[in-house]
Amino acid sequence: MVIFVNLRQNHLSQNHMISIDPKKAKTSEFHSYMVGAVAPRPIAFASTMDKEGKPNLSPFSFFNIFSAKPPIAVFSPSRNGRTGATKNTYDNLREVPEVVINVVNFDLVQQASLSSTEYPKGVNEFEKAGLTPIPSVMVKPFRVKESPVQMECIVKQIIELGQEGGAGNLIICEIVMMHIRENILDANRNIDPRKIDLVGRLGANYYSRTSGSALFEVEKPLAKIGIGVDGIPEKIRLSSFLTGNNLGQLGNVEKLPELVEINAFRKEALEDIFCKFGSDSDALERELHLKAKEYLDNGEIQKGWKTLLA
Image (cartoon, rainbow, N blue to C red; front, side, top):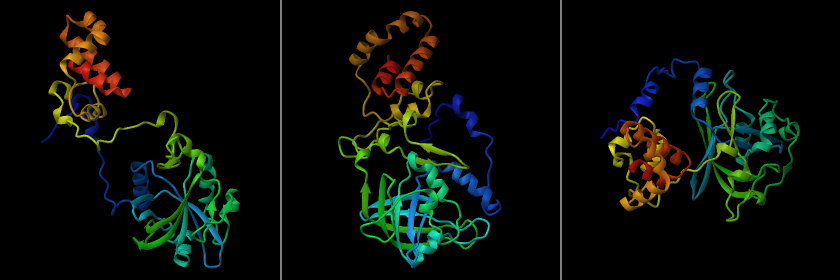
């Protein structure tokens, strides 16, 4: 079933698309579009060591986690876009298949960026970036003391994705020990996103920061079955004032409010709107939808529903 949502608001966004064939585009151009579109990306601040025991430290934003049991992290030190040469991190992992993935928070972002400089092999990025190496428990590479979370990993597999400049090298590694700074935990011993203050990588020189007004919650529909957007009455679903996000909020409830609840809320919170606009049905609908949107944008889903159904 096709649902047409907010056509009057969103129809312009459907036009003026550009289409790019990666086989015909310059690698640097397509890379720019990729990292601009898939963002923000977490950063693997990877500490490695060569067979002679010399450390290397470099950040990679082609990174994520993919399994909890076994705990698997994946990142990709790509080949140099101009020369096709492999990075020191990749070369080290071929010699010593162990790595420490240190997370990057706001306090660390400038030093992490500095460590991405393409220094010659053997140069110690810990020293260049002014960071403190500390011994690991299970692996040879050092941890970054300043990082709030450090994951010691054993490399399980390396997959070369190509030989040309820009080709990735997929590093699949198992986390064998994790270290977490205690002051980033909340009262339930979970990592508090406000305290850890992580950063993410975007395109060009841009980063994002997971704090302040940028931090928000979206309730996961795991313990309940929402009615879905198709379960929303058509007059609400096709509203000119509600966004797709608002409709997603409305569709995530299990059932609609009862009539007695709606009437009580109308008397309590909406009487002024009805008194002022009750003689003009179009104006009344507009004001109720705008008021509902205000509730929804503040996360007050039930109040939003009661307003729309009033």
